[in-house]
Length: 311
Figure 1 (tube, rainbow, N blue to C red):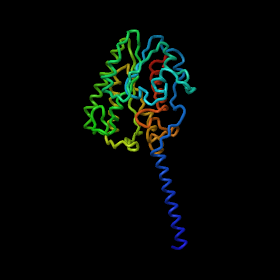
Figure 2: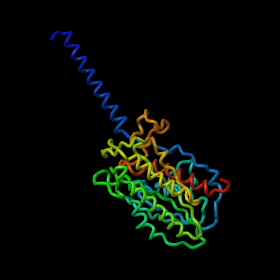
Figure 3: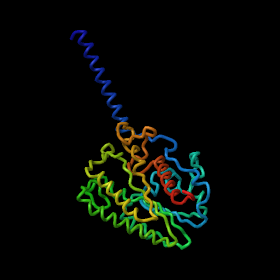
Figure 4: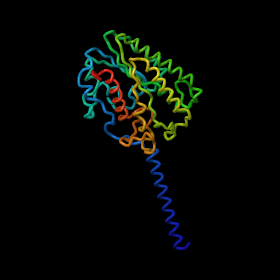
């Protein structure tokens, strides 16, 4: 091989190595890297709404549902349920004093939610633990339900009701209808537990795939009808809540888009340039501390809209 050919060959090898390394780095950054960021999320909460007491009456805050309300994976005192009640140590300056205990001086609380539970278990296991309250007690209920029905068992077992990952649209139609009937029963039973009145705040279901429906980067199998069934469950939540004057749907689906497993992919429609960070734990289905901060803010805004004087 002549010296000229040898140099040309070496240059080609170097170029291929650079391209290979560059491609690997890009693949890691855009497909595998999920930075969580630091500091508060960019969801404003009105300080004015929390400037004076909303009521001097007795209010009973009840958490119901799955691991999101149970606070799975949150640092101590930093689940969304805990942060609704009081500020954790080291609270962000803009939210100091913004919590339910600041405006509901006779607030008491209980959290009945259970990590890993489905809507079937919420009806069978949690409702019986909610005792009928005195007529002088107003109920404030926060709830997350339905997400585990969709994502369990991660495609590792054949889909069944309450564990439907991988189901076809046709296969799941009865399960969607059952979810609607079940949610109606759950809300009826909660309302019956508060003869003095209540307000129920139920979250819709977020999407860690950032609208793509593709969870293969976290080693879950393809689910062709997954997004369609996810939308069907969210439609049920909105449809059941809509005719009930005392039920509010807290939209967590839209604010969490762009903060799932594709948070660094700037070419996707939900990319958040101001906060391109992952709001979930590594298990994909539960929030990290910044995700719980986002949930706390979304629930506080929804609650304040209904309760704060002049809102």
